[in-house]
Amino acid sequence: MLANSLIELDRAHLIHPVSSYRGHEKLGVRVLRSAKGATVTEASGHQLVDGFAGLWCVNAGYGHESIVEAAARQMRELPYATGYFDLGCEAAIRLAAELADRAPGDLNHIYFTLGGSDAVDSTVRFIRYYWHAKGKPERDQFISIEQGYHGSSTVGAGLTALPGFHAGFGVPFDWQHKIPSPYPYRNPVGTNADAIIAASIRDLKSKIEAIGAERVAAFYAEPIQGSGGVIVPPKGWIKAIRDLCSQYDILFIADEVITGFGRTGPLFACSQDEIVPDFMTTAKGLTSGYVPMGAVFMSDRVYNVIADAAGNTAVGHGYTYSAHPVSAAVGLEVLKLYEGGLLENGVKAGARLMAGLESLRDHPLVGDVRGRGMLAAVELVVDKIKKTPLPSAAMPARRIFDRAWENGLVIRAFSHGVLGYAPPLCCTDDDIDAILERTRKTLDQTL
Ligand code: PLP
Image 1 (spheres, rainbow, N blue to C red):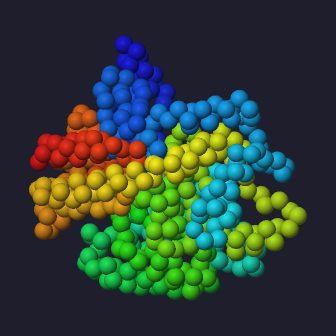
Image 2 (cartoon, protein in one colour):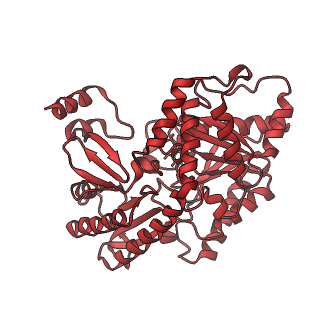
Image 3 (cartoon, protein in one colour):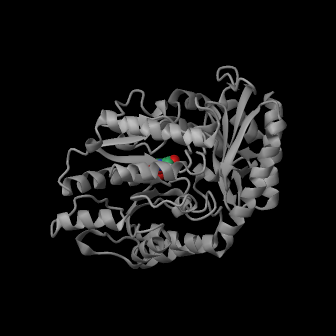
C-alpha cells in the first residue's frame, strides 16, 4: 500500500537522473528500503547482492556504524563551516593532508567538491587559469577519449564522449576534441597491446597537430573507461599517453572518479600504472557514497603557478559546500576502513570475481571478459567470431538488468550488451559466488 503510493508520488514529482521520463512513468520506481554489507533490500523484502556498489560508489559496503558515528559526531559539533574568508574546519584539513600523503608524486594540493562532475568542471577552470597565468591564454583546447565519461555538467558532458549525453544539449563545444578509445576487444588494429598503444599515440599526435600544439591545454583519460563499458586499456598505454602529453607540455588529467579508492586494488589506479598526472579527479569511493564529496588533486607545479599569479587576489572558484565538514569526517573514517582491511579484502574478492567471470567464457553469449580488481565487465555477443553485439531491439539491456534483478543481483547492463560489475570491497566469498551464479542464471535465461 505504502509502496504503491510512493510509486505514484515518484511518477508525479521525482525526475530521475539519466532516465527515459516517459519510460519511467510506465515502469514505475523500485524502492530500496535498507542495506547491509553487500546486500540491498527492496521495500517488498526482495534481497539482492549489489554487484554495482550503488553507482560504483559504495566501495566500503553498507551499514558501517563507525561511518554513521563519524557523520553524527561532526554534525553535532560543527555541521557546516565555509572555506571562504580563510576559514576552515579540522576534518577537511586533516582529510586533505591524509589524501596528499597517499597521492602519487607531487599531487599535494586538494580542492574538495560535491562529486565527480564538479571535480572535472573545477579542473577545466583551474587549467584555464593556469594557462592565463603562464601567459598562454591561447591554450584553450581540450582533448578526451571516445567512450569516455567525465560527468554530466555542461562542460563535463562535452568532455564525455557518450552520445546519450550530447543529443539535445548543445555539447560538445568546439574546444572539446576526442581521439578513439583504446578498446582492446573492438580495436581496428586488433588486440595486440603494442599495436593499440602505437595507434593511440598516432591518434593523439595527429589530433594535437591538427589543433596546433600551442593551442592544446589538457588531455583527460580514465585509467579504465567506466561508463563506456569498463574498457581496460593495455598495460603501458596510460604511461605512453602521459609521456606524450609531457613532451608537448599538455596537462594530463587522470579521472579516477570510478577507479579511485580501492576499486582496482590500491587507493589510486595511477599508482598501479606508475604515472603522476598533473591533476587527479576523484569522488564516489572517497566517502563511499554515504554523503556527497569529490576531490581534485593538483600538482605542486600547477598549484604554484596559480598561487603566484593570483598573489593577494582571490582565485574566483568555489562552492558553498566545498570541503563540507560532515563529508570530510566521513572521508576520514572511510579511509581508515579501507586501510584497516577493506583494500586487502577487495584485492582477494576481486581475484575471485575475475576468475569466476573468466569461467563464463564458455557461455555462448560471452564474447569478452575484462577488468581489474573489483571493476569488471562481460561483453555479450550473438556471434563470437564476428563479435556481433546483442541486437538492442530484440534483447534490450533493460531486460537483462530486470532478469538479474529478479535473480537477486544488481549489475549494470550497458546499452551495447556489456554487463558491468563494481561490487563493494567488503564482499565475502559467498557474495562473490552469488554474483557469479546469478550472472550465469541470467545469461542462460537470455539465450
Ligand atoms: N568522471 C567519471 C570517470 C565518472 O565515472 C563519473 C560518474 O560516474 C563522473 C566523472 C561524474 O561524477 P558524479 O556523478 O559524481 O558527478
